Structure formats: C-alpha cells, structure tokens
Image 1 (spheres, helix red, strand yellow):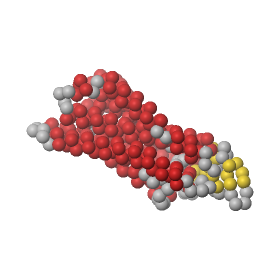
Image 2 (spheres, one colour):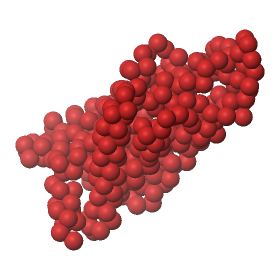
Image 3 (tube, helix red, strand yellow):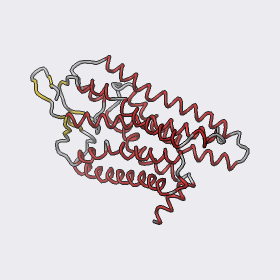
Image 4 (cartoon, helix red, strand yellow):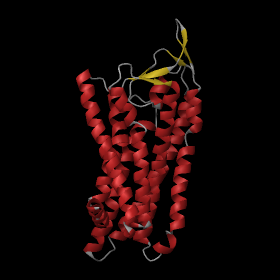
Length: 311
C-alpha cells in the first residue's frame, strides 16, 4: 500500500478509481454488451487459428506456428484489459485495488512488449521465405522457431518489472481517479506527489527502444522483401508474396502506429478521450482483426478453417 498525501489530510490508498467510459447507466450496459461480444469474437477467432494450425498437418511450418503463438498471445493480451473493463461497466464504485492496478499494469505491458518482439520475428520469417527461399528450410528450423518464440516471451516479461516497481513505490497525492479503462503510466505518474523527470526519461528510453528498434527492423525487412517481390517474373508469384506479407504489414502499422502515439512520452498532453480511443485500437481492435487479416487472404488458412468448421 502507498500513502496518499494531500494538503489537508493523510490516508492510505487501498485502490484507484478507473473511470472508464463516462456514460449514463443505459450507455454503460450497451457498452458492456458491445465489448462482451467483441471479446467473445476475439477469443473464438484467435482460438480457431490455434486449432487450425494444431490439427492441419500442412500448417506445421514455422510461419503458421508463429501465427498460432501470436494468436495465443493476443488472447491473453485482450484478457488483460477487457474482463476488468466489463466489470467496470456494471460497477457503481469502479474501484480497482492498488495491487490489482499494478498487476494489470505489469501483465498489460508485458504482453504488449511480447507482441513488439513477436512482430519482427514474423517479419524475419517472411524475409527468409521470400528472399532466401532455397535456404529457408535449413535456416528456419523447428528448433530455431521454438528458440525465437521462447525468447519473445522471456524478453517481453523481463522488459517492464523495474520501471513498474519504481512507479509502484511513488507517493500519490490528491485524487485516486484514473480517467482511463486501464492502469496506465501517464495517469499514474500524474497522480504522484511530485514530478519525476528521471522516471519519465527512463520510461521514454525503454519505450523508444522497445518500439523503434523492432519497427525499423520490420520496415527494413519489408523493403528487402518488396525488392525481391518485384524481381519475381510471374504475376502469381508476386500476388502470393503480397498475400503472405500484406496481413502482417496491416497488423504492424495498426499496432505500432497507435502505441507510438501513446507511450513514447507517457506524460504528453493527450486528452483522456484520445488516450482511451488509441488504447482501444491496439489493445482491443488489433486482437479482434488479427484472425480476419491473417485468414481471409491466405488460401492455406482459409482451407484449414473450412476443414475445422466441418469437424
């Protein structure tokens, strides 16, 4: 527990108030139904990709094994925020405990950073498949694929413990109100008793490394992929390459673009409404559309999905 200091009194923080979306009771119930449906669709869509890859022997390749792991990650990523958001819609107090807030903070950002590592690994796989097709089977082995997947999870969960522990030890003053639907560093730092420029600088550094290094690598990989694609003589070959890479570029652009807006400078003056909207894009919308963008334009995945639905 942390001490809550104010000019007039001193008490103990037992929790924060997550305001979420401020609408009348009827609007809260409508949003509950909407996000509950979105959550179920996200779980079913990503679970269907996992099952399709698991049960179709033709999909037991590094590309689809990475996709199945990515879908597994998306299930947990959306689960780190949406269930609590749904409970908040039906709550009168909207209180989240101090420990609950920082646990959500840790898992939300750890899963998000794991996704930041997964996306360049998937880009690396596509680069090898398109630019080094003859060497691909010998380079992208099952063993290497497993090592890359494990590394993404380990790095993702080791990236944020130190800054989150430091923020949790701050003294918080005044209001306990967080005008967001998730425990987020910006609103939390705004509640601290004094400015923390060193922590803000440290946060900017680790977020910049986490976002820009993988993003630059992904863009570089796809520039090489595009160069290789335009050298392919057949139109069918180029179409197949674009259909393979297009969905990944879509997810990368949506995820990195929205996260960069929010977190490179956590205390920048984004309005509360803008913070919630952008956070919804990368934490709810991206996991929802992941099964759509990876399935609709991929013949092997569409065939596996049809096969799965007939079971």
